Amino acid sequence: MKRTLYWVTKDLRIADNLALQLASQSNELICVYVIDKKWFKPNKFHSKPLGDKRWHFLQASLNDFNNSLLALGQQLYVVYGDTLTSLESLCEQFKVTDLIVTKVPGTDENRLLTQLRSLNSQVKISQVDQFTLFPENELPFEIDNLPASYSKFRKVMSTINVSPPIPAVKSLPCMFQSSPSVTLYELESPPASIIGKPKQGNNFKGGEQQGLKHLKQYFASENPGIYKEVRNNLEGWENSTKLSPWINYGCLSVRQVMQHIKRYEQTVESNKSTESLYLELLWRDYFQWVHFKVGAKMYQFKGLVESAPLTSFYPERFKKWCLGNTPYPLVNACMNELRHTGYLSNRGRQIVASCLINELSVDWRFGAAWFEEQLIDYDAAVNWGNWQYIAGVGVDPRGGRHFNIKKQTNIYDLNGEYQTQWLDPDIQASHLVQVLDSVDAADWPVSSVTHTKNSI
Ligand SMILES: Cc1cc2nc3c(=O)[nH]c(=O)nc-3n(C[C@H](O)[C@H](O)[C@H](O)COP(=O)(O)OP(=O)(O)OC[C@H]3O[C@@H](n4cnc5c(N)ncnc54)[C@H](O)[C@@H]3O)c2cc1C
Figure 1 (cartoon, rainbow, N blue to C red):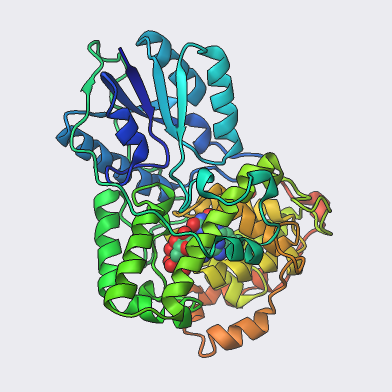
Figure 2: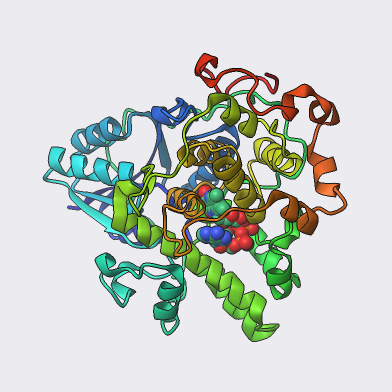
């Protein structure tokens, strides 16, 4: 008798879901998503692990997944609490024999599984490898021997094909005979935003159905054929795929995206742009494997290279950066877009990250944590991996990136249109943005560094 608890995490979809397929082979099943209380509390970097825009996206994704499960005679139990305690008590209460979860590289997730294993040793835990284009057993090397740079990784992977997605499950086992005493958590509206209403541009609607719709629309357009030329533009919904939020919550799998790239290449055209799309997905894979390999080093100041950058923590500078009040208008425009919409182009992310590290001399981890709170598409490995890369403590063989803000402005916003869209002229003209340090850093109140109104 197999009584399975499917711990749903970054796999909020029915199609191409190997974990759900495995769960479908049980006698009885319960599908559980845990919203951890910790996600809403500021961490040591003064940011929350889950900000209101991603929370909004997550709620829609949970509702959509629940609707799909209901159509298959199942239901999603959404529990709000401490993840370990919730899972442990559910396993005990319902005499769970098997726990299934998608394998992800986060250190918290893996520490939790280790603790769960020791607390519930009779439960068989299966981690399903489906978060990347290639599962670990298809890699032509052991994780410990992961190539030291992306270009080497890319070379090694060039001869391996991505497997096609698997079909959606058609039926699921019944729910546990005795229903759990936990009830479906009433999904609340996200907390009122501390920075006002989104100005524009937030087109991301959570859930598998919305993700599939967007995937089809993007590949039905001519945009994949010109991706390489336009992806670096600072604005423009169609200039990159905008698939990242759905990919990172698993509303879409990367293999589904890959299937669309291949189909586009076969039916429309295959060129440098379509190759580039694949290479970006491969970058994402690379960061996931780096994270699997290095674990907690992904979050450490000295990073993978174990060498401390020449930066520190300056609360006023950090706050000015978060709120778009630095002496650099392009950076301010980017930070405003991020704060108002939960999204920023790849080029924008590179410019603001470089500014925080190189111009403001602030510890890169504060920036990574602010991104974690703000981004709708936050992914641990990709976010912290990219930040390390720019800070020169990660997988960049060139040892960090310093973007010349003036040059970037001339290339990507020569006419100032992007800045006009995202800057408040009154704030730009004020003393606030012209001076980097208004007081001695030692006198600056560290408390509530970021969670206050846009005025200091
Ligand atoms: C400092 C910094 C932090 C970042 N944090 C995140 C993050 O938390 N989550 C996230 O998904 N991306 C992150 N990125 C990578 C990149 O900016 C986003 O993936 C991209 O902008 C998302 O938009 P898109 O889906 O339109 O991307 P596209 O350009 O259409 O790319 C397609 C897909 O390829 C992957 N991809 C693209 N660029 C990168 C990259 N540089 N590294 C790894 N994978 C990539 C993503 O899965 C993306 O959805 C970060 C980049 C930087 C410089």
